[in-house]
Image 1 (cartoon, rainbow, N blue to C red):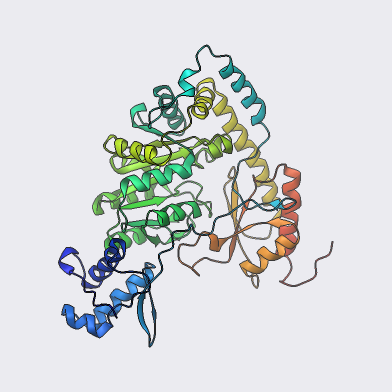
Image 2: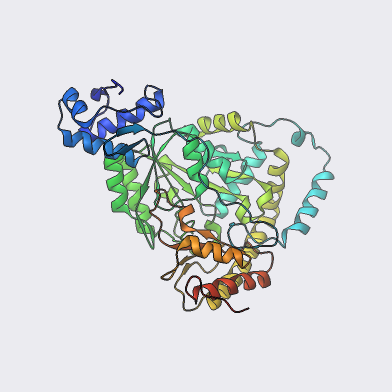
Length: 459
């Protein structure tokens, strides 16, 4: 048994919380190794001069954070620190109808790409696109990024815009720039797996915050902030992934006030915001001094472009650009040039308008084909959220759909805490190549929903 003992004077707040924080720091610093057994509840209580109940509560808190595991009769042990990413959604095998990956529809972009590549090739001077660029991006590309953010309703000066290699890289950049290992990251109880992967890689303590049909609950956020003293909250306020919730304006304002009260930062992930024309103002606009706004061209324009834009307070620009330099040195200037030209000549706006129209037609089809099965969706969103009727279980439905040639994403892929996801599916209506393929996939889903697990389906 380890003789480890925390020094609680370094950790203000309730004693149980201080003990859990000390465990987290000791693991992060290497003082406690995976597999080590912690002192018994009674032994640690005697050493620290606290009650056994305080230690019991502290160990429960540490286990809830994923730091330890306890077994009756054996003791409490430091858990293995897993650096691999949590389960991620990957494209299905060829031949399956894909309703699992949240990509935009792809049909209208190829001619536009051909045209802009020809224009770039005919430019008199391509040298600026062939050499290394500043880690923040070329000045002209940052100007275009600021213009793009303005199209989405947020106001950042070009010098406050940092260019990334898509939104996933933007999440990595912001979290590694503004947090330290062991910091607490608050997230929605159901969260994007890519965010959880980044948090895992950054060795952050991820704490879920309860939601309802409208998104993050401010009262739950306040309690989490009071209890865990977070460094940052990361969330998707508009067209939440996976539930499609759009956080009301009043909640956004309250969340901003809670962030000020408890002094934590906000990461406003707005990659889907363009798909909700009547959305409330971005969360970051309510607390711009402590918010980083993230969006990208992958959902709005085309996935392969891999250009993201980070709007940041001036105080954090240098740290975020340094994180870009550390991870990829710079976003590719050629890709940023394509995005900039599309933004400047109106192509970006046309592509977003087309995406909304295409998604609207697909959502209308889904509403028709899933009539009678309650689900949550936005009229021009890329995905919908489908609770499973009894007696279906997620694993059974996913397997049954796959056997019929359809890939879907179960709710447990998004659950921050194992076993905490409701029985539900995320269906991505924009993923199939055509609306006819979507119709075929939804037909399978509807047939399965109408019958109990294991019932023979008629072809």
